[in-house]
Length: 218
Ligand SMILES: Cc1cc2nc3c(=O)[nH]c(=O)nc-3n(C[C@H](O)[C@H](O)[C@H](O)COP(=O)(O)O)c2cc1C
Image (cartoon, rainbow, N blue to C red; front, top):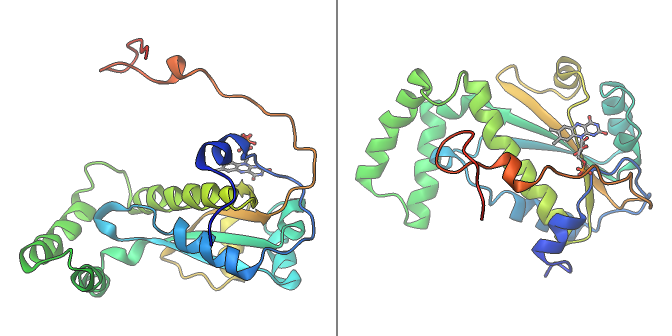
């Protein structure tokens, strides 16, 4: 199933949508959005993201009550509870990643041995992150970004949301203690018009040449 909107237009058209039509997302499109979105990269290919796909009105109302009653939670035909699982450094899970790589021919014995120690070491020493939650969150949000962009190429609008009470979402949706809720993502078809575009700072203001703060010009 080919997307109807090219990548550049999808990126330029994507807006955080606050109001959705009741039109459902065809299951085949939703499946493709999830499949392609989950092609997102992750450290050691650990794929710590987990998504709960919420479609029933009952569940959406339950979720809305944990999300400051944001209207898009019940209006959107699909809301993803985007989670990240801190248990991905456990040996059994690492073995499952190794097996996956072996099945695809990308992991040999020596790389398997390397990651069996490198992953626990990285999580113990965590030189590039403060906590495991920060690491798993970082990975999961990349997947969320992939999903939003892929969705837009299929004409499916989205709204990422951090306005929710994580403890309540975890309790109501049976989310284990070691799993964190990164954000909610509403998916569906926007009612027009969008809220006015808030704009972005110019590239030169946000990108530096060679060291932080040094002016960059293309
Ligand atoms: C991590 C994250 C959390 C957000 N949380 C909310 C939210 O709880 N409610 C909401 O209406 N919009 C939320 N937004 C949407 C932003 O307000 C929106 O992306 C931003 O204003 C830029 O607008 P645009 O995406 O339409 O360009 C969130 C966006 C991100 C990336």
